[in-house]
Length: 346
Length: 257
Image 1: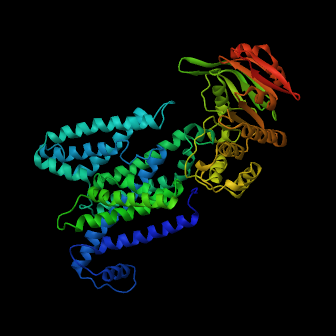
Image 2: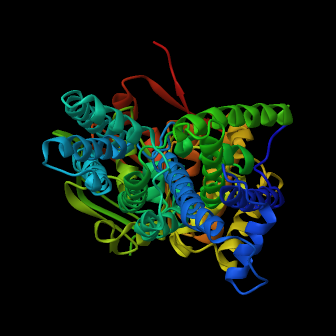
Image 3: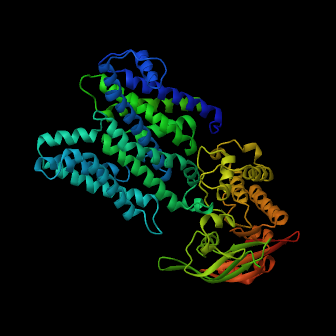
């Protein structure tokens, strides 16, 4: 049997289920927690804010839902959406299935910046409140270095850029390790927690900080779907079809990296989402980036909020590292879909 | 005015000169095939005409416009390319693949217009690709695949089409079929073809004009029949070539010493 690319109907079904999953994830994010508040009371309270019905929540319950759980849920949505769409975009622009949002040094740069802020606090040269800022600066500096080394000039191509990313990451990671090793055990623990990524410190402030970056960058990534589809025929052929490959690559990498840097500065290094979600979506809707990228936004958002709900409840009151949960759920889901798809093809 | 005008063209890769001082004008609505031994510079020449190589010296103009002064999108509306080893992206439908040829018209942010879709329909029809249009590109046979790549180039609606060894890896029937399809486009639509071919017999039968290239320079240039029958051909290929007349067509055969 020959396989054909998925039909529009199948894509619509996947999109519909993804949106339903997203709504369920958002409700879970608000409802599930150590303090039990009924689902319908939370939903009723949400509607009362837009003038429909009236709330039955106490002031304390309202604070738990809207000042603790809601910003955490929204930040989870933003992080999941941005990391997934950036990962999918990187996979497209580098035509490499192993690409993830951290490929060009964002993680290593942010790690060094955050470590500097945390470790430097002990010696008075920095303060922990600088962590997001220094992580962001480190991430953008790292990607800029990678671009300057590997992305310019006539002969540059996707592979030189990836190799430059590897070199920059290795250098910055070694600097980060050195810095960390020189510091107190207290700082080491905090650096380690930051590196694992978490939504625990989410607040409305952090949501508003990253929202503009994520909105603009995710939009650019999604809009690049058609360009990435054309570029799947390779660099020379894309050029002969009328694509300015280098410009497209620059814009797309800039948007993915900026959005990722903003997210990393707020939540640390959440692994695995950026690589696994686009692959799951690809298995469901085919290889066109015009489909993969928008669906990855919703799928990634839902996926991360579910993962975070698990991370903060299964071992409550302590939390599991979010990156661990995304891998523990993501890997089996991926394998399941892969095997289902194989048996369908046969 | 020539459809393609190459003037004093030199192309380099690093310090190596791949093509030196080539001048060649190709009339609109004709078929010009570049022949020559491996390493002669055939691929470099056609890739330069398609705008993919940096010109060290000289110029290439298509329909009077210098390709160096055009951006990618403008150039893609003047000249299309069928590469020697096209990338075939798995998971893409044949129709979507052929539609890639319209990107230079509708751009990267807009979907294909009704006019773009009509062009794609016509191309699929002309190349008998309709029955495959929903198939995944990787499921096609070699002959179907090459026809599809030609379809993408024709969808670009250019005056000039450049083909680099378009029949490599095809069986005899599919080789003839593809070249016949192309000939039809030349005769019916006034397309200008610049191609490289290894098969000298087919090169002679389909082209109006043959250009023999060796070591980056033009050695012979003329009517297909004259070039095929020239003694120079054997010399440049470093072997004994004989031309046999079969029902009025020239057939080039290598003879073992």
